[in-house]
Image 1: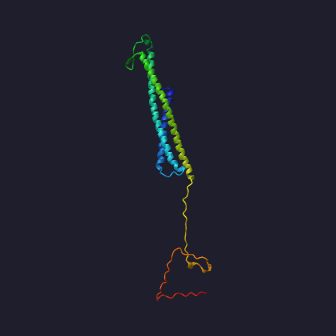
Image 2: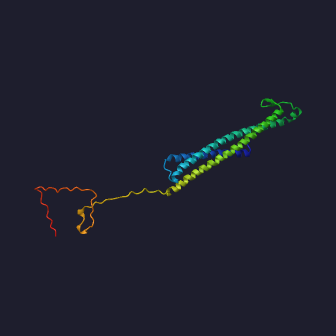
Image 3: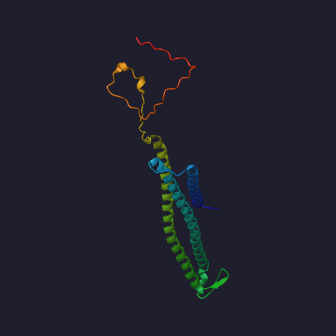
Length: 234
C-alpha cells in the first residue's frame, strides 16, 4: 500500500505534466489562429507591429515549453536511476544486517548476492559505491531542476506577453490616427464668349479665350432660303 506522501507526490507530478502540455497546446493553437489570418503589411504603428510580435512571442514560448517537457522527462529518468541506486544500497544494508551474527563469527565467509558469492567487505564497498552514485545523480538533478523551473517561468512570461501585446493592439487599433491622403489641387478655366457679356457692364478688361479659335465664313444662303429676319432696334 502506498504511503499518503507518495500518493500526493504522484498527483502533483501528474498535474505538472498536464499543465506543461496544456500551456504548449494553448501557445500553438493561438499561433495557428493568428497566423491563419495574418497578411504581411507595413509596420508603421504599434497595432500593425503587434501581430508579428505576438507570433514571435508565442513561438519562443512554445519552444521553451517543449524544452521544459524534454527536461522533465530527463529528470524523471535520472530520478529513477537515483532511486535504483538507493534501493540497491538499502538491499545491501538489509543483507548485512541479517548476516551480522555470522559475519562476526566468520569474517571470511561469503554471501550470495544476485546469484554471485561475495565477501562482506566487498558487499560493504558495493553499498558505498551505490550511495556515492545516488548522491552524484542527486547533485546533477538539482541543476536540471533549476534549469527546468527557469524554462517554465520564461514560457509562462512569454505567453502572457503575447496575450498582452495582442490585447493592447486590439484595444488601441480603433484609436489609431489614419492620415488622409493629400488632396489634389483643383483648377478650372472658364471660357466665357464675348457675345454673352452684356454691353451695359462696361468691363474694363477683356477676357481672352484660353485657346485659339478659327473664324469660319458665314454660310452661303441658297436662293430658295427665306431672307433673314429684320431686327428693328429701338
